[in-house]
Image (cartoon, rainbow, N blue to C red; front, side):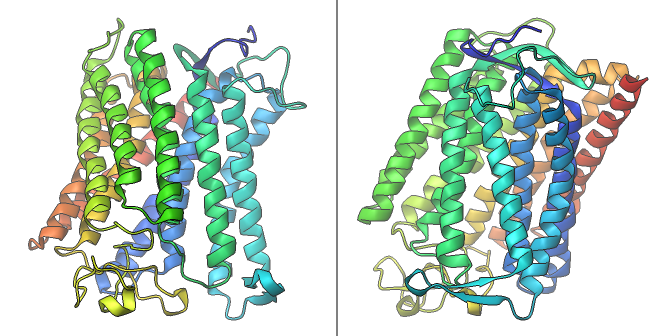
Length: 483
């Protein structure tokens, strides 16, 4: 195979073992930890432990970063031994991370390390292991993104790259500059996360300003979108100039969003300063949706049933995404305001005129972690809208990547295992899981009797079913290929 690292585009393939590792991570992060939180605490009226919520969110998003890596590893000029090492570590890392994090937060007496002017840090040996897992994981994943962007990394690359037995190639290509933006903004999101960890979490302090968390989460999801949109456009056969334009637009609007967030945080301006470029990012997502309809061209041989499933959930995702700017313009108007947690009166939440006197909407600063109050009520509050924005949007991103993989590789994989028609069931259930999630979120916000039911009784089972079915399909393909 020719080394095309000097080309302006990156060819997409699928490293099936690494994709299976991402599914294993999602199985741990979503059904296992997520449902422990729901049925072990939430439905009993108890506050879900903060560390469990963090584990759930982190692992689900890490699995999506692993999906992206599984798509780019086949055509990177990596040495075969490095590919195998990345795959095996990806399988082992997530369970180890969960165990270490749980040990750290359930210890009765973590060590208090006093470092003078730097502050007092609550540390433990499991906590050190957590940091090693996090930093090591993102060092590797961002490194893979840089390789996809065309950067040479000594000692890791091979002059004669070859596809392994368990990798599949495709004709889909996306601009390398998409991976430049992906690697850069994912790095900023990770760095922001570590700043929050060292300045606040390890010191048992409330995060301030609260907008640091928005910067951490939004830049992370936007970085993923910088790959998702051109990938979908190329998968359906959009014109190359349209894909290049979308990549340039995406990088530009995410940079403007980062600049707006920094101004918002340091100069305490109105939230419009970063919400405006955030709306341009939604337009960038719209271009991807428009391409699925064939607005920029369609290639021959597409599985149009899968394409329609993509159109359905992508369109729904645009609605979920637009709830975010609404929250930012109406409620999170000051860098130290959040709607996530229970709050007392306006005086306790901070001296902000936008906070009502009795603060029934639970607007305020991040709470003191030593007295964790739990998340705010959902009924008729901004927190209910935040749930609609965060969870279905996250689920939709996962569904979109899975459906794109089915669109590019599904027919070949399913024919190999002798189940070509299974693609229709997979396309339906993958697209439906985030949708039923959103119905449950809306029902809970409206306080309809049994409102969250579609999420708990349909959305969660469908998501779990999707993960297990995809794992079975990929494992069967690996066995067939091995023979």
